[in-house]
Length: 118
Image (cartoon, rainbow, N blue to C red):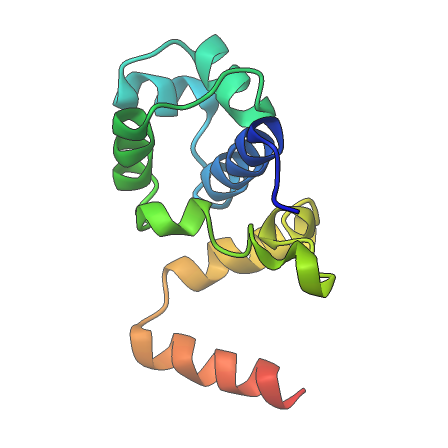
């Protein structure tokens, strides 16, 4: 059985928050960039308010990710995976994402290969 709408809203919100934190952008800065107040960003991040497609598109632009980033892994519950949102609660994971951001594509590829080997 698939996820409910509120579970999807929550998962998207967790990914918005994780990416925002990884980029070291605060809620006010994200809100200003997408045309809402920081309180609305808080509601998006907790899943309390649903994010429209147009707003999610703008968030993706500001956070420098494709819109698909917010949906990756959401259908994986059938094989026991919980999706990306859970692992992004870990401060070390967020730090690694932030550090990876500044690397060249070549270095990112090398690090991914090393991590797969480990």
